[in-house]
Structures are given as C-alpha cells and as structure tokens.
Amino acid sequence: MPTPTSLTQALVARFAGRRDAPALVPLDTSGESGAAVTYGELDLRARALAVRLAGHGAAGRQVMLALDTGPSFAEALLGCLYAGAVAVPVPPPAVSRAAAERTAAIVAEAAVHLVLTEAAHAPDVSRQLAQAGRGGVACLAVDGGALAADRAGIERVAAEWRMPAIGGDDLALIQYTSGSTAAPRGVMVSHANLLATMTALRDALGTDAGSRIGGWLPFHHDLGLVGELLHPLWLGATVVLMPPRLFLARPGRWLKAIDRYDVTHVAAPDSAYARCVREVTDEELAALDLSRLQRAVDAAEPVGADNLRAFTERFAAAGLRPGTLTPGYGLAEATLLVSVGRGDGPAAVRGVQDAALCPSGATRQQVVACGPAGGAEVRVVDPRTSAELPDGAIGELWVRGPAVARGYWARPIETAEAFGNATTTGEGGFLRTGDLGAVHDGEVYVTGRIKDVLLVAGRSLHPQEIERQLPHCGTQFASAAVFGVGEANRLLAVVQEVRAIGRGRDELADLATRVRGVLAEEFGAIPDAVLLVRPGTVRRTTSGKVRRSEMRELFLRGELRPLYEELEEPVRALSAARIPRQARERVPA
View 1 (cartoon, rainbow, N blue to C red):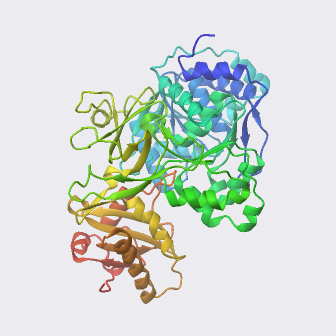
View 2 (tube, one colour):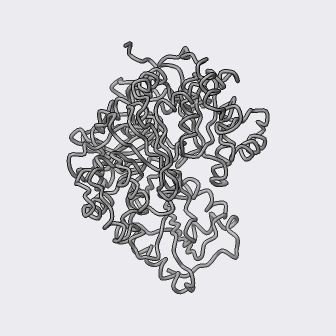
C-alpha cells in the first residue's frame, strides 16, 4: 500500500481495517455513555457529508465548525477532510460573550465559505454571521435535514464520494490560537504537518490501536482537536468523548470516567490537575482505580513541580503510578507537540540560569523537565541577538521540523516575524515560539512567555509563578492574574479573586496585606496595585491559561470592579481617568 501523502488518505485506509471497532464513545455531563459509533459508521457519514460539501463548492475553501464536543463534531471534521476543505474550528455559540466576539473576528478574517453546526445552534450561528457582516454564508446543521437522511439515503450519497486530489502541502486546518498574549491568530496546518505530528505523538506516548484516549478539552483547542480526536482516529483507537462541562462542573467526574471507561491516555492543563487535588473528595478518591491509566499529559501551560508532586501523591492511593503524570510542551504553530516526558518515572526538576534576560543579576528558577523533543529540533536563543545559548540557560525556545506550520492566515507581517528565522550561526527555518525556557541534558524546560516576563527592580519575574503561589495564601484565595502596566510594563499589578461574601473593609485590607507579603517574601517584589475581585473575574482561555493581556486592558479601561483595591501613586495616575471614582479605595500600606 502506498504511503499516505495526506491525513485523509491515512484515515480512509485506517478506517477500512477497523470498520466494526468502536471509534467514538460519547459521554454526557454526568459521565454516562451513549451508543458507541463504529469506524464503519463514522466513515460512511464522513463520505456522505463530504459529497454534500463538494456540492456547495467547499473543496479547498474554509469551512467553519461551530459544534459541541461530540460525535457531530467528529463527523463534521472528517467530512471536511474527506472533501478536501479547510476546517476552521471555533467555540459553539453562547459559550461566552468573549467567545462570540472571537468567532466573529475569525469569520471575517478566515474568509469562511460555509459553516457546519448542529440544529440547536443554527439560529445563533446565523445571527453571529449576520452580525459579522457575513449573512450570505450558508449554515448547515449536520444533524438535520438532508445531512440526517435515513441509512439508505446516506449510503446512496456516500457511494458518490471520491478521494479528493490533495497532498501534503495542502491545508487541512486553520487552527486559531488561544489568544492568551495576543489576538487569536489562524495557524495554517497542512496535511504533512498533521501526519508528522501523528507519528511523533505515537512514538512519544506509546499509543496504538488498543489505546483508549479521552479528555474534556474543547475541539477548537489544539490539544483537544489534534491530541484527543485526530490522533486516536489516525491510530484506529477509541475516543472517549467527554464534554468540557464534565470536568468543569466537578473534576471528580473526569477521573471517574477515566476509571469507568478504561481510558489509557489523557491530557489537560496544569491547572486542571491542581484543581483535582483541591476538589476531589476522600470519598471520590476511595472509589477510583487509576491503575490502567498509562499516561496523563500535563501541558498547555507551564507545569508546576508542586502540582506534579501533589497530584501523584494524592492519587497514588487510587493506583496511579509515579511517572503517569507526564509534563509536555507544545503549541499550535508546531501542530501541537514539541516535547513530552518519557513517563518512566517522576519528571526532573532543576534550577536554570536566567542569564539571557537578566544579565546584571541572574536568578535561578526551579522548573520541570518536559522531556526530549519529539520529532522536532529545539534551540534556546537570546531573543535580542538570535545567538544560541549554552546548556541550562534560559532564552527563547526556537523550534523547527516537519510539524511546524507554514504561518498565520492573512497575517504576512506576523508570519515573517515568527516563522523561518535563523540563528547567528546561519541555521534557518526556525519558529520563534515566544516561550522562554532551557534545554538541559537533552530535556526541554519551559518557564513562561517573553511577553509575560516582568522586569521589576532589576529582576525578571515570571507571573505564572506568582499566580501559582497566591492561592496557597488561604482558603479565601482563588485565581489570580499578575501583569505589568505603565512604561515598559514596569509597574506590577495583581488581580486576586477572593471568596469575600460578608467580609468587611478591614478584613479585605488584611487579605491585600497577605498578597503583598507573599510577593515580598517569596519573590522580593512590591506590587504597585492590588485588586481583590469576585471569583470568576480572571479571564482564561479554554485550556485554563490566564489571559493576562486581556486582564491588563480591562484594568486600564476601568472595566474591573474590585471589592477592594490598593493603588500606589504611579498606577493611580495612570488609571485615574479610567477607573470610576466609586470603585477606588486606598488604605495606606
């Protein structure tokens, strides 16, 4: 059999040999399963949908997918691949106002030709299209009308399908980034990029057709789409489809589903594992058996050594073995995977030198190894000079390899800045990730984002480290956002969620003092602004990353409504015209 040159060819070949095997096991928000979808059924529906899409002239054009995490999304994605269309996943309607605004921007930028959704969402999607000035774009419900014909009708339509004339260089997806540090950008992912990633994931994680891969991350997120849907389908494995609300409502349900449905591989952001440690009860823990779980990848944001240790220790009683929780690192521009731990024991934790960013007084950070690069080359480069840095030094992570995408859709300037870069030694073809990290003994360590690093009093501070530490101040503290404002972002601001129902002004002042104490004692920093806010105020991406750039803008525009705040004079002068007078309070430090 010829080697597939497109992901479509690879999937069709795989499905042909697994027709009666379960492809999808859908769960509801309580963790109960619906009827499994076989590979034969999924292939049939994908072919029929592809014929319909071809009739709408979708081949080679952008098709937006606005569906819930479930079998209909898988059918829609495969229909696009089978039609030679370019899939553009977005959140389903009504997720949030921010998600709706993001979708409207994507519709306009990505030149969407057609939208696939579900009947329940079709009115909202049509309204979003009209509001974005694209009311003429057709909106098709994959679970209604001609697309939901009887079995005989589906078979008649599917029989008309022919393999599209596509190859490795053709686009398969436009994967929009989370927008945690900038406006979302559409990464152009080719079939060759996806094939390279599939092989790298298999080699790194030891997955095969017998794996059962499940997760709750939405499919408009690259880790959910590529890692938890496309990869198991490429393998011929079983996808246990978990709706995001399964985890968000109660983390214990996610772990229970892993146990109940014999899931072998999962992935989630670091904050999700931390939440499991905090919220899974002793009673829930006693009923869990996680001994069949082979790999749980901790990715999508910098990994905390304390979280790794706490999760492993907490769930050892449920049969979780050391090394199952494995740090990983990747990004949409590299089609998901850059590196992942080997899973043969606890991840290494080392101190790395921050000489690239703070040469006058370099500090050391304790960071977690995210394993060796998988199918990619990684260099650590001084972001100012493009010179490679020595082993163990922190700099910008540069990546190259067959999984690195070609650039951003409709953004030539940003594409030129990020892709195809060369070091001072003349090595070219590198993606500038914008991430800070180090390589030591062949393992990749990630410390944060360049745009997030704050230079305060001559020291470089990584906000995610502060955000990770603050919730340990007491049970009153929830999420936090730490960012810089003012000239060169040198003024340090902390927005801290507190559970403050019934608390008076003096008690809130005590909580603010506690925040200041943590920054002074643990990080040697004095914040210029401390805002205590209600839980739910801190904005996050779908994978749990704090949207610091958005929080900064909300603060500067006066759109945060603090329960209590302390502003030093430089910040007060910066924000006086923007923050409503009734929201201001100041207690001398």
